[in-house]
Structures are given as structure tokens and as C-alpha cells.
Image 1: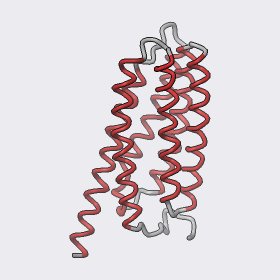
Image 2 (image 1 turned 60 degrees about the horizontal axis):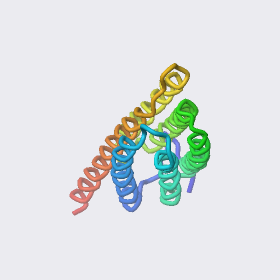
Image 3 (image 1 turned 60 degrees about the vertical axis):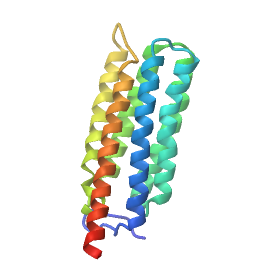
Image 4 (image 1 turned 90 degrees about the horizontal axis):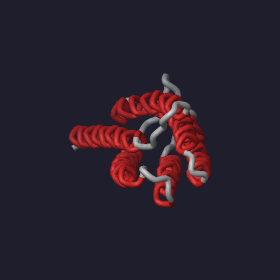
Length: 197
């Protein structure tokens, strides 16, 4: 399979759309569950909060692995693999920062991860922006917002009163965009079925 370019995109198989739809929908549900759990646990940086902090980037790492296996385009797979490795490192780093009891270091790590991961998400979205995968605009917006929000988290972490409460908002926002992207893929799949019926 040749590397995808904007001028010559590879054809998207129905099973790829189906795999991505399930992946986005699952990630949306998990992000909501994580946001609800962390909203109750973030006040004290104890074992439960640190476990949740580690879990969030690990969810992204596992999702990247599943996505990598289902994606035919080599250029996409490289970015997805990079994001998976980055998320794994972020889980380790945020666990160390959380175990040390520092809210500011945790916010710095999470913010830095959000910046780089958001950029990677935009890169993948641009490679998938063809009509066969619904245009990918929710993914592009989500990645861009992640990039910008990550910068603000690093600014907050350098301030006098950093708070981890913002992370629940981050996860909730991500969930909305994942569910929207899943909805677009489902709509596109139904339209294609009608055309070929």
C-alpha cells in the first residue's frame, strides 16, 4: 500500500470505517466515565487520583494501538504509533509527578502531553479528511483545542494556584468530539449502504 497523500488518498474500506466508529464511540464513553470519576477524586492527590491520572493517557495509548492495527495508510500509522508511544511516556511521567504529590508538575506533564498529542491528532485528521471518513472535522477541532488547552495548562501550572479540576473539563470536551466523529462515520456508512443497495 502506497503512502497516502492529499492528491492520491488510498481508498477507505468499510471495515476501517466500522473500526474507527467503534473506537471513537468507546473513547467518548470512557472519557465521560473518567471525567466523572476524576471530578470526585481530584481534590486530594492520593492513590485513587494518581491511578486515574495514569489511566487517561494509557487509554489513549491502547486506542492508538487498536487504531494502528486497523489503519492501512503508512503515513497515518507512523503518526499513530508516535502518539501511542507518547501517551505511554505521559502515563509514566504523570504517575511519577502525581506520586511526588505535586499538582503543578502533574499539570505540566498533562499540558505538555495535550500539546503534542493534539498536534498528532490534527496530523492524523488531515490524512483522513476525505469524504469516506466523514471529513474528520471533529477530530481536527479536537486536536487543535487540545494543543491550545495544553498551552494554557502549562501557564496555569506556573501560576500561584494550579488546579487539576480542569482535567475533567478536558476529558469531557474530548468525549464530545469523539462522539461527534463517531456519529459522522455512522451517518457516512448509512449513506454508502443506501447508494450501494
